[in-house]
Length: 341
Image 1 (cartoon, one colour):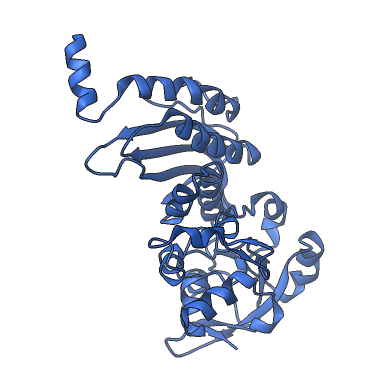
Image 2 (cartoon, one colour):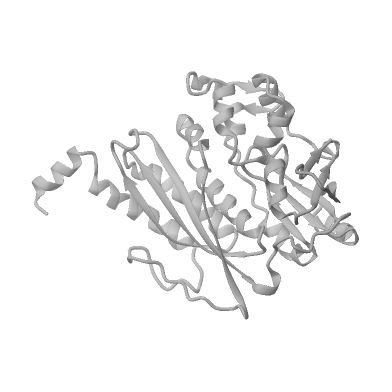
């Protein structure tokens, strides 16, 4: 490639030198989140993972993003937690099937490649992968001027996990009178941010992120960037006692819990049994939002729902000190699968 060609590409908005610099910066992060099964270093055209250790393995995959929470990170110029959000969300999704994470790939699309920002984002991804024993095996950085504004970026992750066929959690053994337990969320996690931005007028006035709220004991921006909680470490050893798991993401309890309930069953939940974090009450009051809609959009303080037999409640409560009995499974003949009172 001639030097004038490189200059022309830079004038078009793509900086190859910045991409090379970013790769050099993220190498140490990627290498820190590896496993013995990884057979390749960063730079090859594909990531190689030697799959072993299972008798009847079933691969479990998930791909997701972090939504418009990225806008909050960009407005605050704080990018060290957004990668943690991405990994934890994906790990929780495959955990709901009973799977352990094997490896992770990320995609960052941006208007202008800023190497230091990329390093910060990937550093968070690597930290979260390392904490759950998941290999960060590859990724892609795409500088796309004209598609993204210069300071905009998007972040997507793909996770591959595995579970023994006999240990897959599908919810098919759930029956009437089973208990519904909940594990607390750390806040909004990665859902509902478009509504939150409208409620607080964040796009028009980003200074609202700097406002201190006594009920939150911190600024709105600090609250909104609280990382998505990962439940794998605490739940992993308890999985044999569990009939079903529901990761409470977009759609809230109303949209996610029915995904694991067999036909003809519903869940009755008692909202007085758990603590609803102040951020949700602040959003509801500021936006004048009906309570029913709040439960359809946000997790409302429950990040993971667990269904087990009544006989297993005591053991699970002992193994998971933060868990709360929030309801039970009942028979239903109607279309309403979740009843929150």
